[in-house]
Length: 292
Image 1 (cartoon, rainbow, N blue to C red):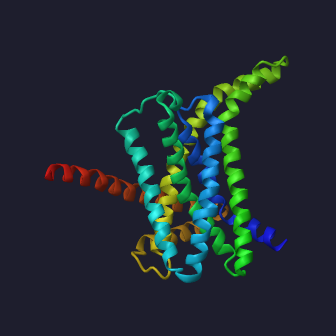
Image 2: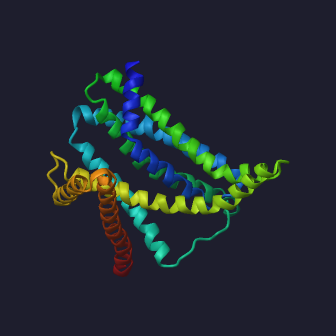
Image 3: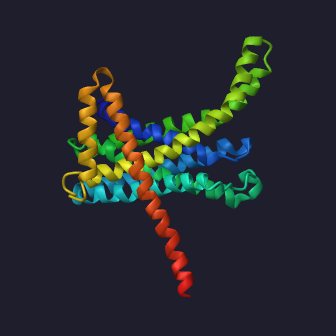
């Protein structure tokens, strides 16, 4: 019971990043033929649980016990990667470039493997954030209780996130089946689902990109400003101060408006940092090629 309660509290604490994870993943399935969607979601889900149990959980517990000061640094490395991914997608969209629209299966197994590996890499960062938040929630407990709670969190969150993803990507097929039923109301619902899902998935893709920038920027801002790192904490203090002022001065809407301001600032920081990293990564190969 103690483990279940602790796992429940830890899962609730990480709910914001869980929502981001569910929003980010469907964009990787763009261009995948319907017959392969669930198979790819399954591969990503298995990769996600492997990330949590084999890589993140042991590393987080060991670092928390022996080198707790390294956890913020590792999180910031992951946050920088998320910011880079999000900024790259934004600049790619703004530049008007378009990827090959052929489904991944038509491009070959390598393209499908690239989709899965890209999604699993991004999941690694989001899962690390989720598990570290969960670990902080149960840090007062003994080692075995921490371990058991985090294992439960890993399975619950993975099933929740990828269950939602699987439901989203197959909803248009559900709509097609409903559209073939005899009842006119059910048919209308089915047609509505078929019509709406492309727009829903397109919206989720945008939300996923924003989530990358938001979570990446928030990880950087919070951990740079966290006590113990001492690294350039001015952005954190400034944002936190204004968020608190908004919360206190806007009455019933204070929490929502304050959170929205924090989220916007985090996304801007993520975009700026990601754009800098993107520029550096493009400049270095060009410089090497020129020197040769």
